[in-house]
Image (cartoon, rainbow, N blue to C red; front, side, top):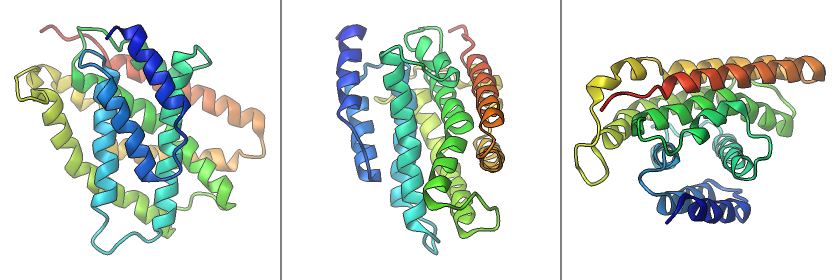
Length: 244
């Protein structure tokens, strides 16, 4: 299947998808995974994201979520920002700079699968996550609070990521069918650039800042544009080609 044909099918999947539950989010991710060929870098971020989402559903904290409805709604809002970013790229309609690095390099054979996955995580966590938190806060009428049960749930997701991320990196490094496709030793510097727990903590802080700016639209827009630009810059650094 050519990239043009797969992109048309991808656009159709996303245009007809309007997930309101985590199960529907996972179904959309599975459709994307089944569609995209192995030489498309977007496939590898989508795979990582799907693994994380499934793990959040299947491995709640031992004591349970403090606010399961909150974590579920956040996951849906968060995922829809990812789907919207893909669709905007396919339609040439104002794609965030945070995502442009990944979309422009999707078929670059000099970039490893792990790099594509980390670049997507960079865009999604550093740019999309604060926006998702603010959107949910707006729906609920209360801002992010580090002393809240919801923040405790947000932190609990870090524990899930600590388990899933190494497993995902191993799959991305060795290939789905087990062939040695990557040399992780050459990716040490790239992997060292990415710390998911730190990125999520920063995103919560940025959501708090954005919430305080909610009534000062000019400043809020400037903050979002700066965040978008810096995230895009970091994403390009994660995609530096590595000699095979």
